[in-house]
Length: 159
Image 1 (cartoon, rainbow, N blue to C red):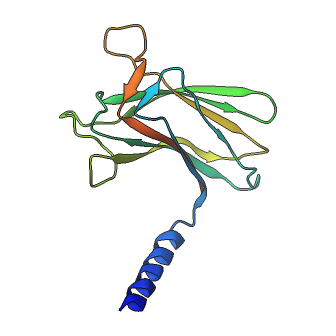
Image 2: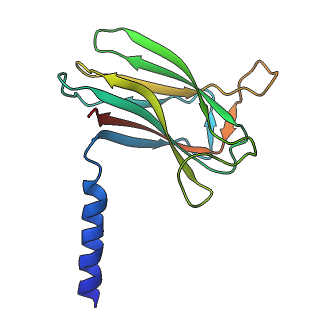
């Protein structure tokens, strides 16, 4: 019986991991129980095939402690030639009734957010992500952003 269960688990694992053929980079970094406004999450990208195109996603894991409907991020992409591209992004994280969007069966949700599509990489890049959430009507940013537990980056081959 144990052998049968082990074989079944092995087959399910192989099936699960083989379905992700588009993935070329997928990494998460923890920000603790709250994401500080000065905390920068950085990813050093591997050198990718410069003849292929890729889609880039920012992945977030959040929980019911996230108090806002939207999330604002400042993302910098440091290119090998010394140039840096800065984007300010806004993503919807919750429905109007406060229900978190994203995938997951528990109070932890995972959101796969488009960052760039159809990108060619030439050389080594570094990507930095910083939260820039503000409370309505207030100028200073939220110092400790509750509810975001991990920030990830995923790169997929374009089909």
